[in-house]
Length: 131
Image (cartoon, rainbow, N blue to C red):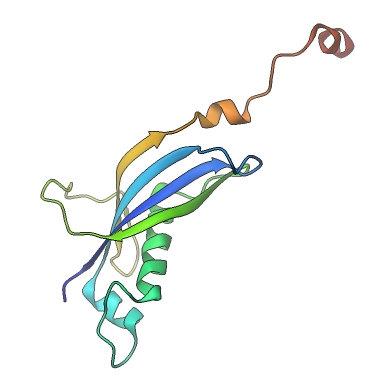
């Protein structure tokens, strides 16, 4: 087995409005072979069907894009086994101490996060009250 490659789809959204789509972010994660072997445990070959490998890929993907400040939140929407693409940049966006790496491949705003955290214009009555 070689390094594990996982394509992780994340969603960054406003925590107060979880039903809104927010921003979709695709991250490619590389988990080094030795790390994957440790995650598999003694006597088991590392494979993409091991939950610990998927969890590690989720953690690396989240660290790659950064933990958002409240009221924003992030969650994993989907994960798929992948391979190293030929046009992958040499330098990753994130590298962890164990050698796991993450590359941000795509960002797609489904709905503007800015629109979900801004307030509506003040009504004439509210403007008078605040004077």
